[in-house]
Length: 85
Image 1 (cartoon, one colour):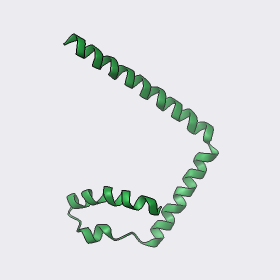
Image 2 (cartoon, rainbow, N blue to C red):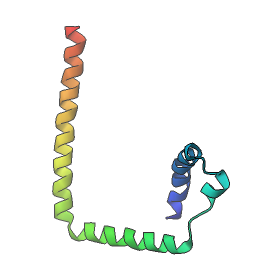
Image 3 (cartoon, one colour):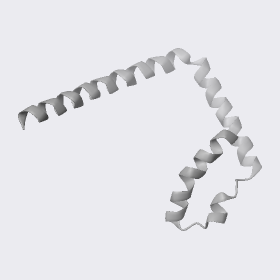
């Protein structure tokens, strides 16, 4: 969890500035209890994913197939647009 802290700070600070939250408030870490709850939810989520690995892989295959079709369509559109125009 501590490895993600710099990433979250990098994501949170611009939005905190837009929302008008002072930097000292945005940089203060959340209560330790929140971290424990989030860590527990993270572990539970990954345990569930691990026990349903076949379902997860099936969904990922479908997502990859859809993304491949979209990529081919966009590539053909780009090529057609280049030669047609």
